Image (cartoon, one colour):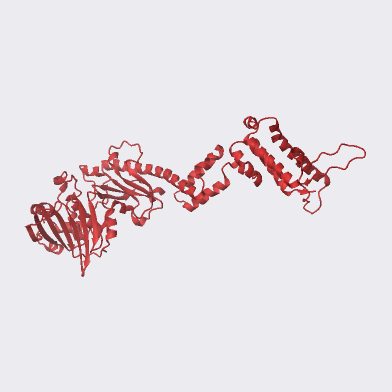
Length: 553
């Protein structure tokens, strides 16, 4: 190994101090070695703690160990960009310093590698490297080109772990899932002692989040753009049901290139005021950035060089995508919340709106829209608010706002909502007369019954005069002035006669025409409009209320 100890100190020990990024470098090496399976073993038994990363990649021969693995700062892209021994992968590693990460957490590294039926094993020790008096370090050789079985692959063992990193295979699988995109061609698992392994899976990135809206990129992004690389920006984005905790470091969109993270989650916007940002997460692959002549990926692979002209174009496109996502999210979230509210309230918002007059709907729709799109409003508040609105503005609000007598309301509502305005009043008048008959027990019917009940015809003048005919019912008998005294007889007489005349008028205006015309002609004529119906029902409701309180004379 030819090296500068300060390089290892700065790029290894100081840059990598926790387990997940070190494992990420080891896994990336396995990916570049065209491995399809990588297993991370966490050993913690008998007072010994070790980490071993084993892959089934192409392995290394003795010459490759010296010219590639032990060579610090080698730009492997220059040599291996199109190299893919069996599968056509483009390599992740670029700067040749990832191997230095080992010394961020371990004092000793053992490498066991097999290729073409030969095995080589060697050990690197950090203390020996630091104490080396020259710019060269010779690892301890254990085996050189020793014959072995036919399986290629490499195992790297880390010993002398000096960082107090907890061996939690499940948590590490989640951590690595946020650094890599895996598929059937590249499987990664983590095993603690003899326990069952945990696999690194894309789903684990967002397993703890409750997804509400999902987008397959670019398939479901309906954004008009002339950005030349837009179809190469692929991935999966999520908006959650509730805001994502900042502690998760999952807010924003993560960028990957060649299956490994290159830019931590962000929004690619100067403004951070949108409430949408607290709900958005996901990942996008931008592999084409690795094909640029200039390296735009930071050494720690946590950010990109956004000052590069091509990266400025990418950033502008991503900003527009997120702006489009916000609009689509608000629309789709309103639809989802609308369905949830319908389930809670038992009423279809669409059906409710359809039975609201257009002039009222114009004022109502912005209110409903604001409630459904209010991302800060809880489901309970949304349901409560919509129920409140529905109580104030019921379907067919003009009918309900009349506050009709309950018996009348029940009988005529179906006629009214079916636009049979003549039939609604006719049925109401018919029921009113039936109620009079039941209250008076009279044998008369129709108009004669109404007269008999409230304002009977008086006998013609004769000598000697006949006594006046009294009505059966009084709508004024139980009422007195506030001081308890009786109203004047003429006052009571006027009210009673007037009530009787109103009742007669309703019968004559809505029942008698049926004796001379067909009900259908009366309905279709335009003589009885919705407004006529509502006004007549209000008057009829007044008659019903008076009848409820009427007393026999």
